[in-house]
Image (cartoon, rainbow, N blue to C red):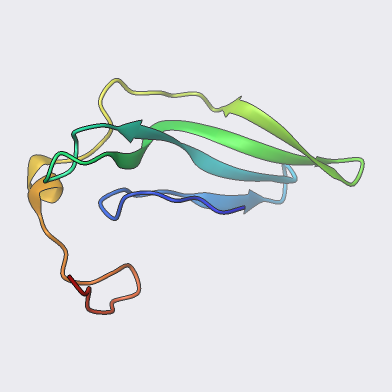
Length: 93
């Protein structure tokens, strides 16, 4: 399972052994939210899950649905230009 999201976003992906499920944040595309007006992909506060049943992964679109109207992102974080990627390597322009 691969999730692609903006570097300003905080996204969680966990395996819950009790539920036998992979649980991750639902991602939304926000157009015009980036510093240069680009689209940013961020969590909207809700979650999705993949449950292991009968040795097959079954997808559940709404798991612990707690959507918020405005994704958690401060203006200073939105305006900050990162000089390193998520691995700490210098970005090349």
